[in-house]
Picture 1 (spheres, rainbow, N blue to C red):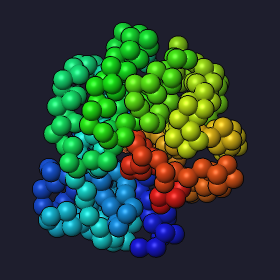
Picture 2 (cartoon, rainbow, N blue to C red):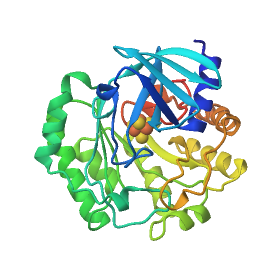
Picture 3 (tube, helix red, strand yellow):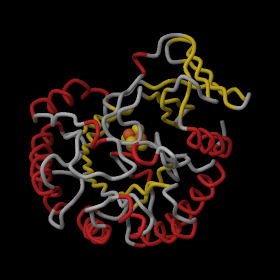
Picture 4 (spheres, rainbow, N blue to C red):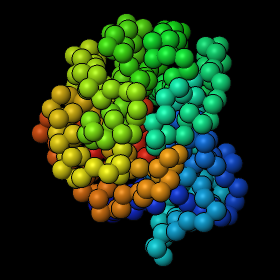
Length: 324
Ligand code: SF4
């Protein structure tokens, strides 16, 4: 499939977000998430065509049908059009990565997020080491994320301990938590090579509405500081598309992050938690913002294909310029 056809297809699939499965069992291809857009759902599949990839959540009814022919060979049908591809086996959470949620619970209540209601138990460092050990021959990256169990500072200290212990695997480590001003330097010293601090909303006003008790301004400052330590193109920030921002809001946010050397990861809203009345952005909007992002990254000399960990290396849930 050529690049333009894939871009069209992926934008359409991300606008839907789900798939119905038929055919042979898919258990070995399924992943169940405790963080990210699929948190708490029935599970997800990664459908790929060559080097292209998209993650779709399982649903009883969906306009997207994934028909598993066996051994990963798959026919995907959407709006009567049929595409041949494969299902990828996830390592931990996504293909080629051990992407681990350290603490799958949270004291904050961001309105779009399911993690606070999941109330999962924090993993011990030994459990995390064993998880990485169990997949180490099949991964290119270790990625870590976390909710906040007790306080932002306590979570940071625990995540730093985890990073320090995982450096023995000699696999690139990326980390995404809610940061303090000291977090980038501490992670760098512990051995992380990339960080992702999510701005989540395109404007400070929307952020205040969506993430009570957290600070847009300090994340913005910490992102700038992170680029100084980790380098341009090795600092990422997820921004949700569909929280009520205009295209102009989103473009201004993308331009400002790119100028600072941060790669924005534009994530179509998955309407869950308190936002279950919201809608996913449509395919035309996803593509329009993708084109803007592509141009902004080029202007700033940023190349997401150099990213080694986390969402820009996975690209399951977002359109990542250079990888699509
Ligand atoms: S893009 Fe990020 S959140 Fe989505 S499956 Fe990949 S690693 Fe997980």
